[in-house]
Image (cartoon, rainbow, N blue to C red; front, side):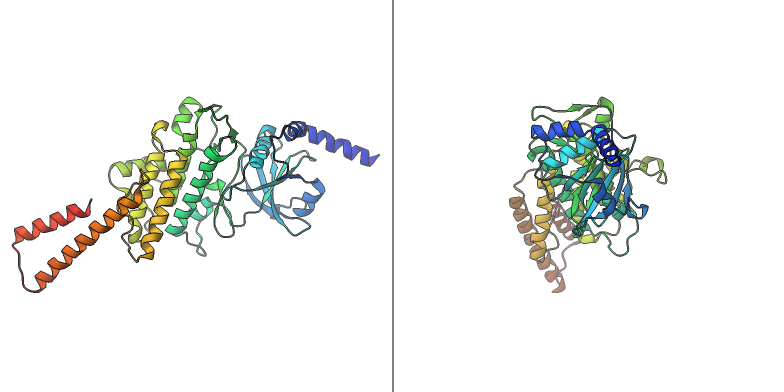
Length: 396
């Protein structure tokens, strides 16, 4: 009798938690059943020590995430949705993540519908989220510029995949540093797809009730209620500025003009005061790369969505900056990134020209210095003229 009651209760929860809707999507082929499985409540209770508070990894708007270990020793993360939460978000995240196969997107392992509160099971990502590393003191692992540039490139690549390479375009709709997890090698994993949407290839936007996180929210989306792929681009731009400045998107502790980080960043760019806001811990040799990334960020933050780049363009530009940095580092040349915007993708020819020009100018300068040491004393007027010519050429 007791077993029958338990079974009925589980069946009721299964229906209540969208089990029938999920089964419908499973049978339609919308969910890739080879990648995900249905976990029993018993297994997940055992894995999380009955959802012990000591196992909590984090809490968010949709629910609480617990760390667990299955009987085979596999470490997992279990998201327990809120009782009052929208069941559509649970089903939505399950369906979307089952379609995605990308190294920089968190992997869904399965779900459990046998309880009052639905559960999703993910791969465990051990090193927390990007927000924690940027804004909370971590003496063990200072986040270097190279590390930040790599994370930015990985997140951009994941969004490019979602927008362009997935079977159907996917808009994430809540890109922020807390939704960027870091694995054991500190590689980025985009997470939290509860508010994400798949759209038809022909569609240009979604008209929805405005959702998102203040500080990352696209002003155009806020004004029109139309979410486009460029709305994700705006949110990514805010994350880029976080990586550049180590400052939070919104802070009441900053002066009035600087409370909104994205707005203040654009003001600094317009007034040629970029390095007033950039994290002062970055080395001098990184200024060229920082300037190039800041230019990308400012374009992502354009108020007119049509003027923003696509995530494909952003990804190619960031990859170009990383490749150029590695190429010039290998050559022992610390002047690697000289005012290159990467707006076209023939950057290597440009770099070659810049490198040759700099080499010629350095030769001129060395010759001039040698002449001075040997006693040649040009007039002050001639000396100033030569210096100004060199300065102008160096700004090319």
